[in-house]
Image 1: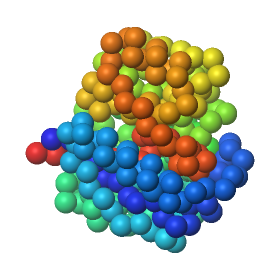
Image 2: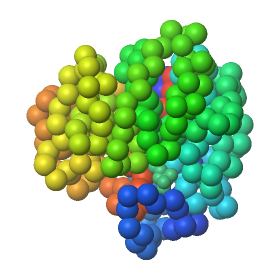
Image 3: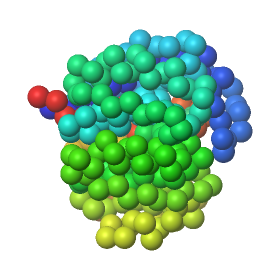
Image 4: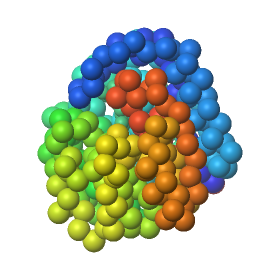
Length: 255
Ligand code: CIR
């Protein structure tokens, strides 16, 4: 059964890290309602949702995708690129150790989970402002013994690999080409994001269903016309914190 670890939106989210976005006021109650609707959508798709308590001292703690990579065999607790976020990992690790043996990244590694896109047994790993070469090496050391292949991808102009590439299932990936080294995705079927909708590339796949952020109608149409069921998720407040759909959950199988 699919499980999703999530965390409630914290009261301090307005003090979040921002890299490519300008700061705008965030309506925290509205962000909480949007996050609740996201969790509800996951439940409706058959996912067992685990809700961790908010972490008021960590403004970005709702973005649980970044402090861990959950593979079928192990979970890797990352050392996030933003120092302000590193304290988020402890409570996440406590939740994850019930499900997987843990592997902890050590300095000088930095890596954010938003930079890791799994397709089958390949882990595409963004080399971004958050993820360095040592981070990719340590992920390889943890994952390769379990049969995963690591494929680094240069990322520029956006926060993470998964800002620029969205898994649509099989070997099909939605991409915004200017943000990544497309050559590193050799072998994948690439679908270009519709013009002007690059911020909609971060889709979340649950089985065959693709969650698409509200506000990207051409992207929703494109995916829907390709025969995939879609769900539209309004995440306008979380987007102001430079978050997207994948970053609000850690999805993994557990019996
Ligand atoms: C950050 O800059 O770390 C947060 N404000 C946003 C993180 C979004 N994470 C993700 O897309 N995986």
